[in-house]
Amino acid sequence: DAEASPTSFANMHNDTRTNTICKSKKQKKMESLTRALRSIHERHEKIKHTVHTAWRYPLPKWGQYAMGCVYFTVPIVGGWCVMQWAISKSVDEIGARGEKLQYKRLQGYGNKTVIDGREEKIGAGGKYGGGNFAVS
Image (cartoon, rainbow, N blue to C red; front, side, top):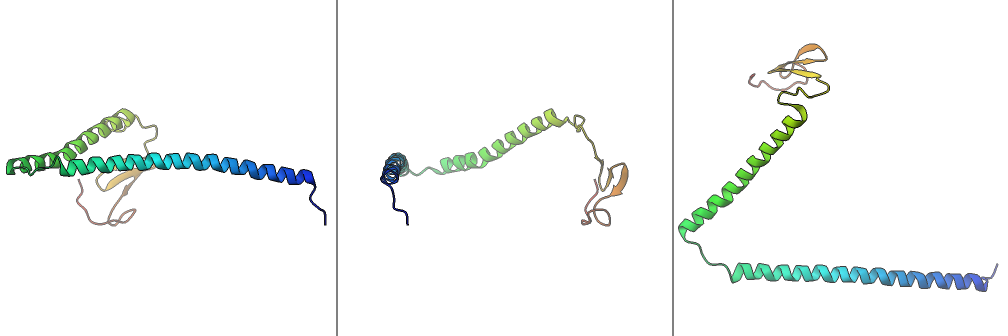
């Protein structure tokens, strides 16, 4: 058995002390973050309590109808705007009919398509299986 030399003991002691100091700094940072988050949460709860108690009074029938219309139409109009934006981005990227695509492998309409130069039926009784659906 080799005994521990005084220098290795000192190094071990320094490492332990350094780890304790580092842990202490990490703990302080974590505690300050926890305090900040708790403070934000408490202020949010206070605002919610104020909004739902002090500022709330019953709406008349016309107000209830108006708010129902607002809550119904906002998501619909917002969704329509998002769809219009997506369509415009699609036209910018690939063109109105896909004319900007680099490779055009799949072409066709209805239940007939051209895959790698061969016309094939897709759907019921054709490639990829499927059900009997209306052909447009």
